[in-house]
Length: 249
Image (cartoon, rainbow, N blue to C red; front, side):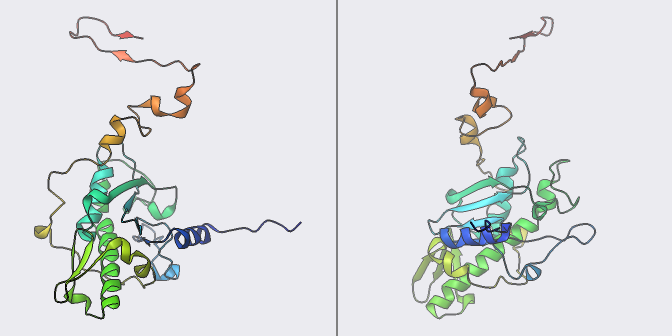
């Protein structure tokens, strides 16, 4: 019997992307001590450690590099990314990042959450990821139509060429965009042109937390271990007046 073949993490992700189809984009931010890695150094393997996945089914999944602990980063990070991506907000989903140095904090150089630093620290990185994906999708559409990319515009996940009345959704362009070389530099929006950041937006994680679909600190009963009948659970009941002692059950 031959020895089992060893598959690297990069090859696994690359193969998975090929099977599932779609566009995956990642971006390494320079970290303290020069530990950052550029896309060029990764041999244009932008499927590794993706921050955003755009599926052929029109889904847009944002990978959150920080923990959601009630502070709202599972919504603020997608807002930053989609401000530049300009996908249909109703198609946005969020997933927690795995343990990997690619998701290290841009300032502290480790994978962490704290100090109210997530949104300020990711202000540029997540916007660049969104802009990179948008540019690649527009390029895929313009190449398909034989027009200049500058003559196309994007509206809620659809690339539009007004002169020829041609339209293509992000999902339909995802595979073609995945074959392109990511741009070395992208231009970000002027904050005065923002349409999502700074506007009232419903949190993406509220439904799953309220219906018990996901595990969260306030919802331990969603954890598999907590479903065991033998497990003892307790809660603190706070009195209506401070003169009455707390009762723990």
